[in-house]
Length: 159
Image 1 (cartoon, one colour):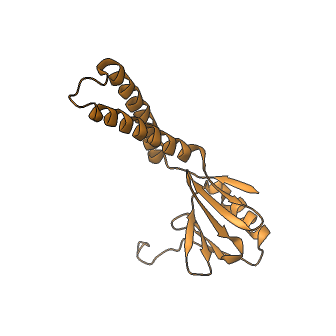
Image 2: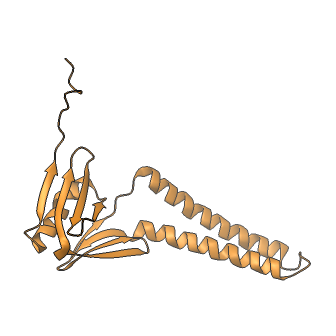
Image 3: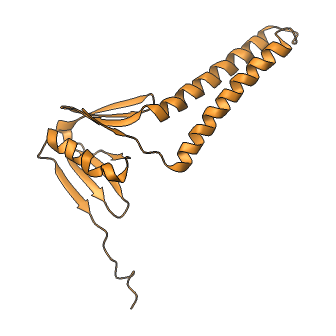
């Protein structure tokens, strides 16, 4: 099985790290308030219990989801399936149903097209495009591979 790590953009990576930091801060602040204020500050004890429980749940859930995005986002090509993993979201695609792989040089995107007219865009490092395509073509050599090249428009030329 060949594994290709998902490539996040710089902005997305910064947002993920900021989100993880905020979830840690929320967890710490919730713990601080729990120990300093306690449960007896409200007339009804249900509200502080509900507040602290929800804050712990939300901060832990956000931390787990964002950490899983960083650690577990990849594509893998095995003998029969193409697996995509985006954190806790996982998908499988049957390689037998792949019709073509297209590299669009204008947008610099690699996409996998299936025989039911659906497609997915592969987001990996540009240096891995050939390796990814080779891994799929090893499993099913009759997949069509095409490159849409950049073409000069007449409007782009200065006359």
